[in-house]
Length: 100
Image (cartoon, rainbow, N blue to C red):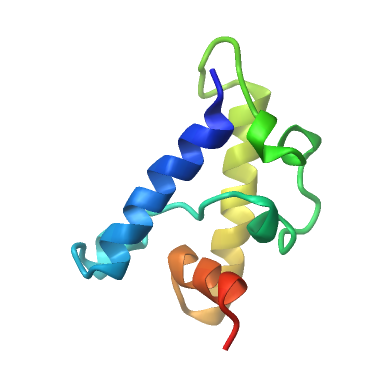
């Protein structure tokens, strides 16, 4: 199951909802950052399973699989950084993609 592409498509959809102002601030706070090479370049100590995000895949989806645990670890690091700036993960991703 190729979750690398699946997470990107899903998270881009949520990012579009945010950009179009179709969700509340509370809802957007739950969104995950879209993981790709540009975003991962800003994350300290990216787990090996996500170094090549397009190849991130699992045979049996499970919340205990190492790949899922690594994904959640990356999202937690991005959330911690976003929280330190007082913004959402979506906004951090925007800053990384389109620096002001």
